[in-house]
Length: 314
Ligand code: A3P
Image (cartoon, rainbow, N blue to C red; front, side, top):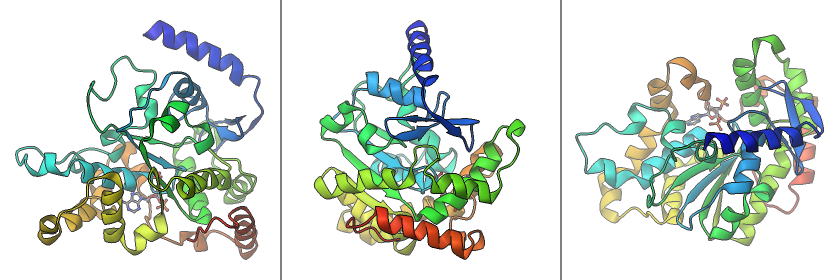
C-alpha cells in the first residue's frame, strides 16, 4: 500500500544520493547503479528498478519484451500484443481493436506499472502477462531469470539509437535544462551515458543470454524487422507459442497484423498529444543526416570491439 511504497521510495532515495552521477538526457541527472546508468523518477527509473529487484514476482507463462530505449519498443509492443491477442479480437467483432484507439505503451505496459500501484495491471490468473522493460539483462530481477519465461530482446544500430534519443530527449526535457546539441548527445552516448546504458553492455547481456538460452531469449534487430517484417512476425509467433495456422496464413492474418502495427497506422492513431513522441521517422539509417564521418567511424570502432564474437549485424 501507499505507506509501504513511500517507505521503500525513501530508502531507495537515500541509496541513490550516494551513487555516481552524470548529466542526463531527459532528466537532469543519471545515476550509476550495478554497472548501468539510470534515470530517477517513478517510471523506467532507478527507484522502479530497485523495487522490481526487491518485490517483483514473475510467472513462468509471462512474456517480456526487453529493449534499449529508442530501439523500436513501440513497434515490438504493438506486434506482440496484436499477435498474442489475435483470437480475442478476431472473434469479437463488436469491439474496436485496442491498437486502433490507444497507444501500444498502454496496451502492453512496462513492469514498472505493476510496481508502485495498488491495483495490478493484470488480474490474478491472467496468462500470459505481457510486460516490457528497459532493465539490462544482468540486473533483471532474479524472479524473472528463474521463472523460465520467454523474453524477446530488440536492438538497433547504435547510430540510429543515438539520433532517435537525441530528438526524443529534446522533446521531453524539462525546459529549464535547455536543448541538447547533437555534439553533446554524441559525447554522452560514446561514453555509455544514456538511460539504461552503456548501449553496448545492454545489447551484449541479452545477446549472450540468447546464445546460451535460445529457447528462452529471442534476439531481434530493428533492421531485420525493417527488411522483412512478415518473416519476423512468423518467427516471433513460433517462438512465443502462438504459431500461425495454414488457414490464418491463407487468410492474410500475418499481413493484417503487420499493417495494424506499421508506422503509418500507429503514427496516425497516436498523432495527438504526447503519444506522438514515440513516432518520428521510423527509418533505418537516419544517422547519415546527423553524424560526421569521424563520429561514425568512432562509434563503428567501439561497436566492432565490443560486439566481437557475438555475431550481431545491423
Ligand atoms: P526514429 O526516432 O528513428 O524515427 P522506441 O519505441 O523504442 O521508443 O523507439 C522509437 C523509434 O521507433 C523511433 O525511431 C520511432 O519512429 C520508431 N517507431 C515507432 N513505431 C514504429 C513502427 N510501428 N514501425 C517502425 N518504426 C517505429
